[in-house]
Image (cartoon, rainbow, N blue to C red):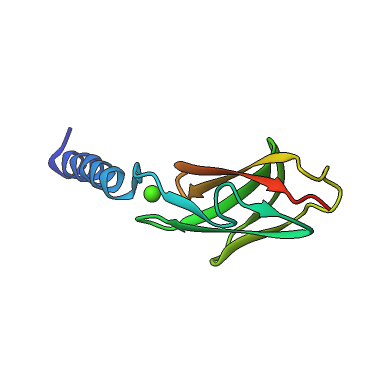
Length: 118
Ligand SMILES: [Ca+2]
């Protein structure tokens, strides 16, 4: 191997190592549901709000009610409106929000709410 090729090869390997270290995002985002409050009584159109942060940037938040995804939001403020009008009065429901960063790391938060009696 002549000197020039050897230099190119070693420079390329160094670049790959540096690139890998600087680009890899292994830090999970954080997320918390800010509205409604855990244990709240809800009715009609329920706005679900969440705060999410990440060292590199949030890609998207997925919103779930009772294990079914009802929507997502990719821009702050993160929120989605759940239509609870068809739910049984007095019934309890789990609200679950998952946040993903650009590298696919995730975080989640969940609360439970009760649909108000008529
Ligand atoms: Ca991250």
